[in-house]
Length: 281
Length: 173
Image (cartoon, rainbow over all chains, first blue to last red; front, side):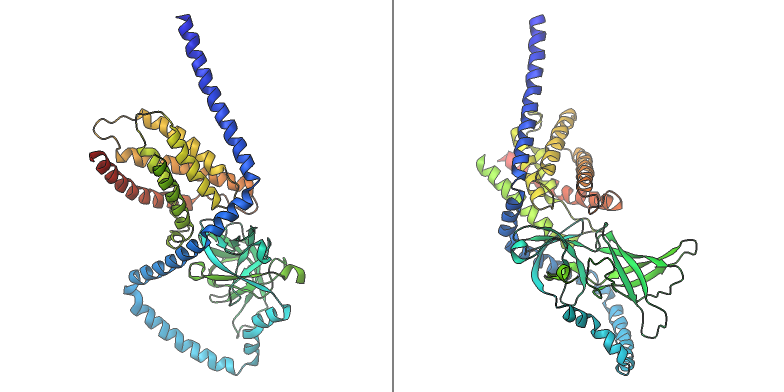
């Protein structure tokens, strides 16, 4: 009986020993593998990039097709809204043509970029994960490094480079929950109020909100937000988004607002990384 | 056997590519289906019930799924592998305790076990990312996690019935 008991205990000990050896071997293997994490990941991304790019484009087309099917009922209303908006825009164009300042404001962004002599590296979008992080198919071999700003061809800010591998990089979007950027509000042409500064905080799910607007500042729906470059992370005057609805509470020291970001990751195939901003600042 | 394992590796790879590119366009409130996790769970759920608590086959599924999840994330290689092995071990233990004579693979068990496993995986992986880069990665365990769980549960249920159908056909043949 005692012999059986000892045998049983020994068998249990042996099992535990096997598990412990297995766990130790696994951890050891993972530690070793992680010394080569960059080349391993780079190899997989390089191998997968062409397929992933096709999947990305196919996903965009399918999503647009499904979206148009689902929204078929609201097309008539949308058409009517667009007609109204078009008329409004035509009248605005007429007034803007007579205002030289208006023209200057329109070209300010492109001029600022030209003046700063930014160098861009074009990269294809190949993936997006649920932490608002985009994968692009260019990496350190193309001169990309961490912290570089990422925009599209219209100078709409997407985010900054977060991780760099040899042939691909990860871009953390401004909608990531831990993203905070300084912005200034370009108010409408007829506004006489002074310029207002605030911050855009990422909200996850490709959304963000405006915060830290002084309670006495006048902000309106439709006001355009551009980067202010106070923190020197991004060049100034990159387009960020526009105010949808302000949330003013007199008991709070600051105003907040819902924001519609200008970027549309899902409809974007190519992005531009500004590679020499850090050197310029 | 080797053929089966090779096909499964290729499926994990394909699913990892799909969930990072194609399916990113079909996110609900920022949540995207985790096809790799779903496939791992389906394989573990249907693998030799009543057999060893955690076989080498289950270990292989966990390691392969974890590897592809980690390769396409921005983190080190390992956290998903370890998490999936632990989940697989615990899941197999629970599965061996659940008895049902009429149906070998009841859907209600699947729903319950998937829900627990997915929540555990999401919580610990999110915690790991947060601890790894507290200034950059948020602790994603709020409303988004609920949407993500419901979304994944829905997709996993579809996979369950498809796999069950194939499994039954395979057994009949």
